[in-house]
Every structure is written in structure tokens, then in C-alpha cells.
Image 1 (cartoon, rainbow, N blue to C red):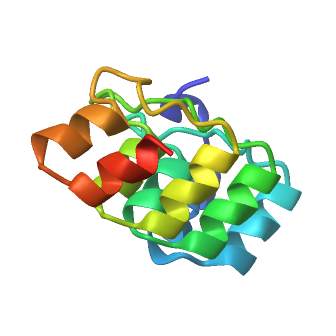
Image 2 (cartoon, rainbow, N blue to C red):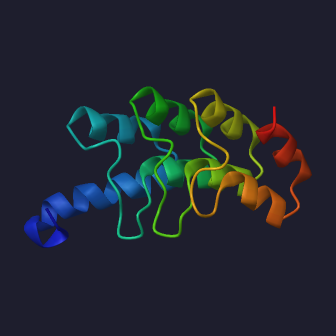
Length: 130
């Protein structure tokens, strides 16, 4: 199914999912998932709600998405995972949540470990090596 197969109302609902992820709206995103929106829905850049929530540092939303079965290993079109996004944003609580869920620091072409090394984020590199 592509965006061309959707009605304008359906497309607006799906686009709102990504806005809710960027804004950290746990209630709205939870309701969307309850209505059947796939937890690993991707936007045109390959981002999932989990990647966006991690990048925008919304810990409660990351927790909700992981609890709902979001794929922490999924990479966007740039090869970035939610863990790489959390490392880049230097968000230790989200990094820990993702690691506890089994996220691989070496997954993806732009892995979390590579991000920590490239940007000299020693505190994040140490966290990834725990």
C-alpha cells in the first residue's frame, strides 16, 4: 500500500502519528495504536515513531512504543536506528531503555557506536559498552 492508495483523511491520520511522535504525545499515539495503526509504520524518510521519539528525547513515548513491540533494530533511510538517535542526542535514559530492550549498538550503517565515536561522545560510548 502506498500513500496514493489512501484517502486524504487516512493520510492525515497517519501523518498525525509522526507529529505525535515528534511532540511526545503519549496519549494520542497510544490511541492511534489502539485503533490499529502499525507500531512500526514508517514515513517517507523511513523513520518510525520510535526513531522520532528517541531523537526528540521523549522517554515516556519510547517506553510506550517498546512496550507495544516497536522494532528497535529498524533503521531509517539514512541507516540510523532509535539507539543511534538517542546517542546523538546524548539522552542516557533513552539509551538505557533501548539497550535494556535488546538494541544492538552496532546495528545499522550509522550505528550508535559509530555516532558516539564520530562525535566524540565518550559518555555515550561508555554507556554502550556497559
